[in-house]
Amino acid sequence: MTDSNSSNQGFVRRDGELFCEGLSLADIAKSTNMPAYVYSKALITRNFLASADALKAVPHLVCYAMKANSTAGVLQTLARLGAGADTVSGGEIARALKAGFPANKIVYSGVGKTPAEIAFALKKGIACFNVESEPELELINAIATENGLRAPISIRCNPNVDAKTHPYISTGLKNNKFGIPIERVEALYLRAANMPGIEVKGIDAHIGSQITEISPYLDSVTKLLDVMMSLREKGLEFHHLDIGGGLGIRYREEDTPPTPKELLWAVRDLMTERGFEKTALFVEPGRSIVGNAGVMLTKVLFVKKGEARDFCIVDGAMTDLIRPALYEAWMGIEPVIERHDVKPLLMDVVGPVCESSDFLGRARELAVVPGDVLAVMDAGAYGSSMASRYNSRLLPMEYLVDGNRLIPLRRPDTFEAMVDGELLID
Ligand code: LLP
Image (tube, rainbow, N blue to C red; front, side, top):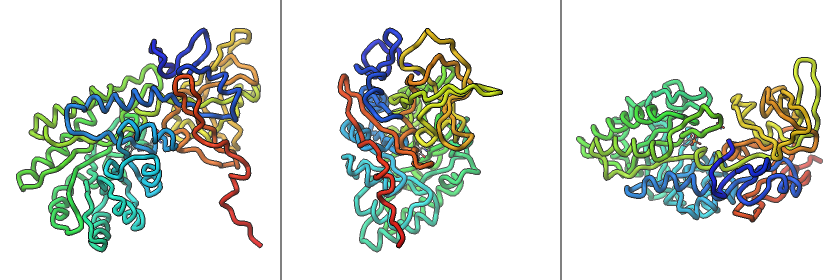
């Protein structure tokens, strides 16, 4: 959605023309390879501070879930604001460290951590392993002991709550592969507390993504607090409670997620009620930090009349932005310059990839001619980070806008770069 904020922050339409902060998106499109992602530094900053400021009176850590957008310049922006990082692979930990996140602000989740990844994270001194199974805990203990270290851990609980979101991005239900069933968690903590290579630090859950209600979080936190309470009676205290990420954003008018402050204060209230006001609150937002801070610009190549429907064929594809193809996610699509000299047509906005699922939007009313530029809105999260080179397409360009400054975040991809890592046979 277009940000109607009166300040110069984010994406604003002025006289029919869409701007990112001080720069016209049409001008940016003229000067770059297409498609291209454009991010607003002011919006990334504002979104991060919405969580960090809400928690400033209490011990906390906002760990940016970098899977949402792991481009170096975006990571640097957040690291400089004091964010921590939520990571899910050795690669993400390496990227986070390179971008300036201190190791002691990095948490590491994921159901399939390899021995090499565990050893790497341990030696770097990360803040916490979010452990997702009993065998993983044993492995971390063994690797830490071997290296004469103690691994800080949290057990990721599967609280079996319905996050009321798309099944593909729901993670806290019994049938999901994530976390350890809440019923088994207490016994596992008691074992963990006696493992020589393990230091119990926290407890966590992550129940899904694009969540637009507070109640699933409170259901989850209540279950975690029950475990903490019972363990407190047995003498085990936690440094932090990590509620995961998942806060939704407003892709459509009818999406009305709570603000980070509403969510975090409700969680803090619950913690205080149960006597855990001294426990630090960790949160792992991805989408709510970068989602509405980015658009993907794509150029109209052809308008094609079909038998059953018409198509707006653009140069951006599922390889650049896979959310519509993968989850049937609805994303706003707007011309960067409104035009009134052609009749709007109802069209599917599709890319050049050889798959029927290659669409960015279905049945959109658009007044466009070839050469016009469209902005896919709210594309800052799970856009570039999920891009691929399928069909041997080049990766999209990426820019950060800071006021009137356009900062390239990568070199334009090339056919040479595309095959650079491949070896030819004799
Ligand atoms: N923490 C953990 C352990 C996660 O698995 C995730 C996301 C997050 C935090 C951040 O969630 P967020 O605040 O961004 O909702 N590709 C999908 C979303 C997948 C989310 C996976 N996990 C999409 O485009 O909708």
